[in-house]
Length: 332
Image 1 (cartoon, rainbow, N blue to C red):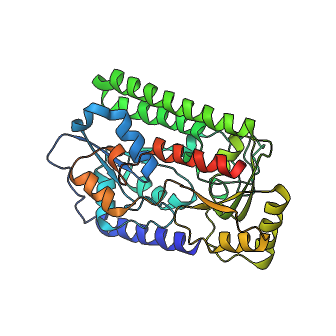
Image 2: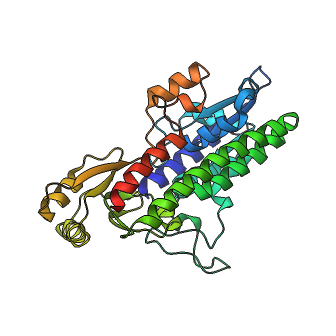
Image 3: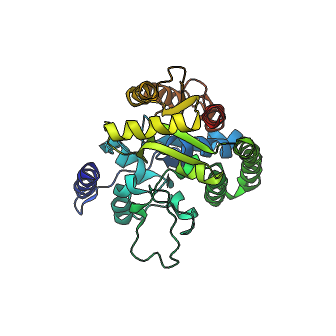
């Protein structure tokens, strides 16, 4: 929370400095390309999939060079990119509160993908739904923001992005819709594989010895998760009670695999395995699609390479397909 407050404060100061009454706003670039700014890797990948062979008509950039919206704080160059953008596409959750001040001040066209999720579908970190139609007493800041990890919500977000791109380039609308439809077929096929894995599992519980951003995904398939920490908690030091809880559950369910995130040091997982008394338990990784290598993204933009060439060849579909393998192991 403190980091977010500092980030919002810095953005406000920067806006006043860069775009104040006496300052001249940054000018548009000399080319006539459509500028789209994305705040996270999945969005960047989806945009590139939708524009496809029309990539030469666009400048698509990714703000968070490591793809992690949680730790991102915009620099001056980022603010200029946003200012000249024809479209800013963001998740719109708690980690991106700073965007509100920027777009309010400059009137920037913005697509918040969190708006594509209905109030009844939004989940809190403890797995609860919002059943209050008036949303009274709640704000988006209280909800888990990792909506991109639900393949079903991803379909909706791809459609929303396609609609916006089609508005920006009306002549290409048919192409963008075709590309989006083809991509959604892939999402649906992968969703069916996840559903099959969960349906065929006798024990619909996974153990996550780490932070747990996959709440929307597990809810889609009726899978319970026993996790060390909720969401993307900043807490990474598991208490004795937490380790004991996870290890006891692993023993109770006869688990062969525990899960961690892509950037985990595996300390908690190792402690859980040790406490379980079963050294044969394996550790599998599920990737949150956030920590994309900075160099890969920079090279991709420099060479005008599109989404599938990011992160040493990985794209959203590929990452989520690899996650399926880990998901199956964890269900066993």
